[in-house]
Image (cartoon, rainbow, N blue to C red; front, top):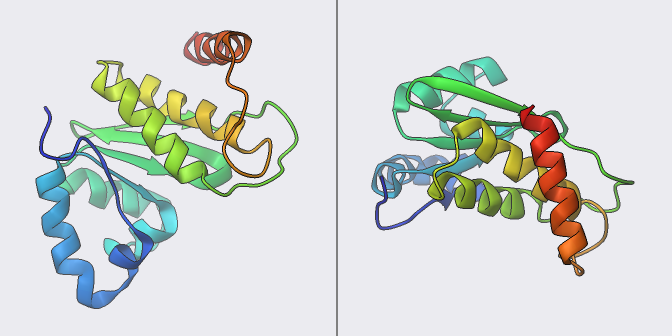
Length: 157
């Protein structure tokens, strides 16, 4: 299941610059698991819609954590699409870093053997906390962890 890179979050430039496209597609195969957002995927896979991007990612055959902004995310693997709606836990302050933290949380869940849909929910909950302030979430306490685990339980029920 693992390769040299547990999960590769494709840099925007690698997805949208035509001269980097071929190398990016080769690198995805080496990574064996990747993360990309909707605008990047539409450019990289020459898709015209979210649905077409999903189809092309699935045809590519490499597991993918696919971030679709405020809507939520998908975990795409084994020719299946596992959607998880976004999570709101407070007022949005700043979306910077949501892709990074959600990718990390989804990768952690997937590498720990969680089902693809649960890995996507992990990513969405992480992004929800990230949205609460500028910069990284500073106070991840035992209570915060318990709240996040309760959100996960509710989303999976």
